[in-house]
Amino acid sequence: MRYQPIDSTLFTNNRKKLAKKLKPNSLAAFNSNDLMPTNADGHLPFRQNNDLFYLSGVDQENSMLILCPDFPDKKYQEILFLQETNEQIATWEGHKLTKEEARTLTGIETIIWISEFQKLFHHMMTMGGVAYVYLNTNEHYRSEIKVETRDARFIEWCKKNYPLHEYERIAPIMGELRYIKSKTEVELMQRACDITESAFRRVLKFVKPGVMEYEIEAEYAHEFLRKGSRGFAYTPIVASGSNSCVLHYIENDKPCKDGDILLLDVGAEYANYNADLTRSIPVNGKYTKRQKEVYSAVLQVHQSAIKMLRPGVQYFEFHKEIQKLIENELVGLKLITKVDIKNQHPDKPLFQKYFMHGTSHMLGLDVHDVGSMYAKVKVGQVWTIEPGIYIKEEGLGIRIENNIVIGKQNNFDLMKSIPIEPEEIEELMNH
Ligand code: GLY
Ligand code: MN
Ligand code: MN
Image 1 (spheres, rainbow, N blue to C red):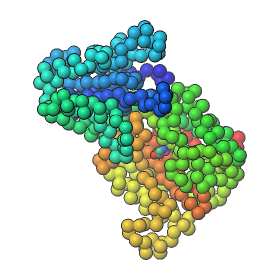
Image 2 (cartoon, helix red, strand yellow; image 1 turned 90 degrees about the horizontal axis):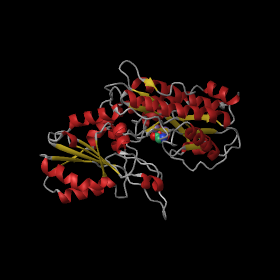
Image 3 (cartoon, rainbow, N blue to C red; image 1 turned 45 degrees about the vertical axis):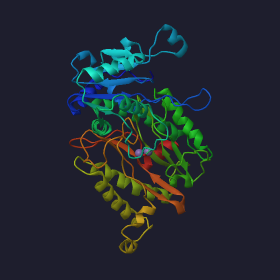
Image 4 (tube, rainbow, N blue to C red; image 1 turned 180 degrees about the horizontal axis):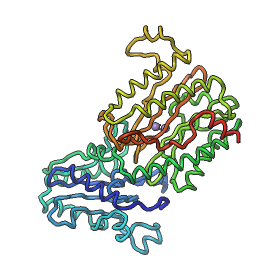
């Protein structure tokens, strides 16, 4: 593993929290993700199903977790099914978890090879008074799934073979659990942020007129990998000049020009947890007067927003407040006037031309993490704060993004040591 072993207490506690939320006499089933094919015998790097990871720490394909907290035989209350391994398999396919390693990693006693799944599952479904079966689907509000997942295949199989059990959705429960981060999870996220910080500091020294955006991407990748991250938390955005106004710019194939702004939305993953950082820096090491004006406007809003996203606040209400702050800054930047605002159509406010995305999202095992955005903000959640102003006609886009933990007294900024003041960024770029 590239990351330090995680104490199994994290996963044991997560399973305990889940068990409390299930109806009596329930069984909950979790599948690993598939290894996704590309062409011929190729496949994408493996990425575990985040719910399975959250409950077990298993980072391996062809795995299943069955939780059945009221099952009469204690040894079947938690079962982990794994791809069989032995010396010969290890020689050909590389290391897979042994039963002993899996016990240490997960805190689960009963580890069974997945080839024995159907027989044991039949026993569970028929012998132990299981009434409710919780199955998993991806219910993320932005998900768009065109392939049949292992979960989807399992749902079909399970319902076909056991049509008269009561079926329930586990996804809303997983959202409620996962959106509150434990101390261990925050530490892992801090590590992802720290790795991101070293790469950003390295990039500050590297950027100069003439470098290609992908060379900057390569600097990040090198630093992430050498620090134990498996790479980018999401497709990196390295956007110079007018590309900074394209919100999902990922080509990263243009030269960085003297006098241009460079928007860097790049974060590392660590142990499947994510960092999500954006900084906007001057290609030549010195912001122009206008770039600095816009930068300072966004920074002002960013600093207010960090203080405003507090327990009890509803995200969409907060977002409206931030939009008002941005609107006010746009007046200061002479992009719109107070009179324009008075006359604007309420459904088409003028600020939307310059600030068209959300201010924040939850962050964790997913970059746009699970859990309802309508629920009130709670202590222990991790949110991004990422206001921006994008002026297409000037080829100037500024976004500033940090990751914060919602605390009881104050929010804690996981990125508090990452350079953000324009003077500090200039200083680091020039020395
Ligand atoms: N980097 C993705 C986002 O900021 O939401
Ligand atoms: Mn973000
Ligand atoms: Mn981002």
